[in-house]
Image (cartoon, rainbow over all chains, first blue to last red; front, side, top):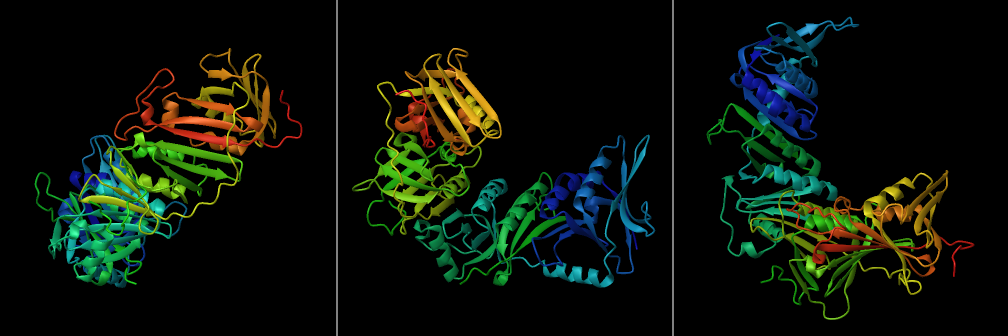
Length: 312
Length: 305
């Protein structure tokens, strides 16, 4: 099992400034899954609890001279602490004249131990000095665990039929942070007309937010006439009856976490409900810098577990 | 054009405001614990929010109709009153306030199920709304009719920041605090005895900036529970301290203490204007806060009669 690559400047920036801080908000510990063509950061894919997040990079986006080999079809997966990874990336940037940041999978004997442990080693060579940082990682996943991870990943690729674009992630995050004070359970409804309706309700209070005329991707429909005069709840109910909307309940905390992905500086974000209300999916889109074209070499999406189908 | 088709009659109140943060500040200043019940009383002049604790402490926030962009009072008779959770009301209003963006909120009472309804009305395609359940209010347990003593009410006005600092300092002795006012030399004394003694004197002549006004024609002295005094300043909004405002103390019949604060309710998008002397501002942009604190029952009051 071998892995060695050079992290490009762009790759370091992408991880250090954007993705690692964003993913850290989802969970401190994640799985890094490396294949022949991709490096993928995964949260909660096997546990089934909490927010699942999948951040996938084509190898060229992050690395030069990417070399990987394993007996398991050249796939390697392990668990890493994002806080430590972030620190290693940050300090590698501070090396004066550092040009090549090599990242390598190694086994070393830590001080005071008799058992060799696996590490991800970051090596920067500057003019006068070289810095080597070892980030401890878990033992690489077994062949069967990697298989399981791959099939969970395949399953998590389904895209909801209807996606609506969130107007302003920061503003939404602000709202959701305040909704957290009110209750724990968030009802999310999405219609094919471009409506996104969020509501927190307890026995004493109901607070909601209703966005309309959002951009829709996938299956869309025209709102029935007279719809604009109705309350948000009545409109949602009618749309559900017509089979043109879906509603799910998720944890407000999970929803807030998914919004933290704005730290990765996506260019847009879409919410959608998976078929049969299996989960709430949020897909972040990144443009090729300076264009409005989707950068297909980077993808990030989260899946929020549904706590209740929302139907009584 | 009414958005609610369920109501046949005009609601008791429909009002709109564009200064959420100021209203939140004013209401938060009487929120001394997390779960606190409040009563709102509506009238054609504005509405009053009243909170009370164990018959010893009462606070009122007066929000006059001039603070609102629109104020339509439709109650046919009497002054409608309803109870609600102050904490929920404040948290809920907070959900409407976006930093750097002055949103307009409409408040309506009653909803189809006697709820208090709130919604943002500034955008047709993005709306925040809330429904707060109300309850039938309890009858007020004691009469807070505040009656001044004698011809000249015994009172003083002190910088709110100084008052807060003094009361915070008195936490250390704790338990009960004796407040004494005397005409000669004109001064106010806060004295706490508990785990130790602490005495704070505000002398009228010592520092002209400290006591802005002082009226006292005879010595009065009463004891108040520390936790009630603390409640009167613990959540005083930072804008009050920044604006260098004063708080007015008046000692009424039987030692009943009235403490009044003024809170700016300016638009959330603007900055708090800085005022030098006394913090004069348009009276229409001020919320009045009043606290009434009952004295502890003393065996031998030391008051001149």
